[in-house]
Length: 111
Image 1 (cartoon, rainbow, N blue to C red):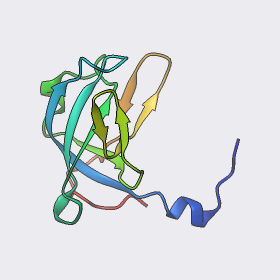
Image 2 (image 1 turned 180 degrees about the vertical axis):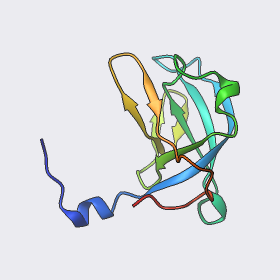
Image 3 (image 1 turned 60 degrees about the horizontal axis):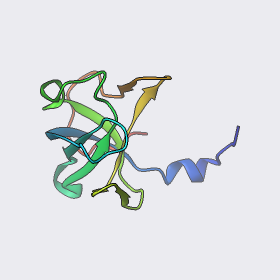
Image 4 (image 1 turned 30 degrees about the vertical axis):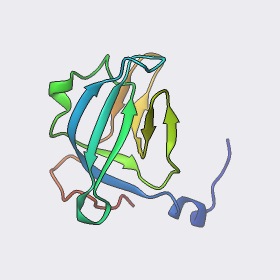
């Protein structure tokens, strides 16, 4: 296990966002959705893909708040440019999204 220093951890910018739009992503190697997520006034809307099709329908995701890392460099995934990383608990076959228990303001920092 690699230990992080406190200053390294502080550089990871995790924020709350609300999923606005969900589209199928047939070009992805593994089943995935394309997500548009609102991170509030300061960060705006960011796009990403997520392999969460076994746990969530597109309809279940619209309006759901999630936690994502927003300060990774953009990453090309097939024909799509991902701008953030949605966080979830991962087992062998499923991802369960992390989210706040109560509705909070989009863009709030996780700390």
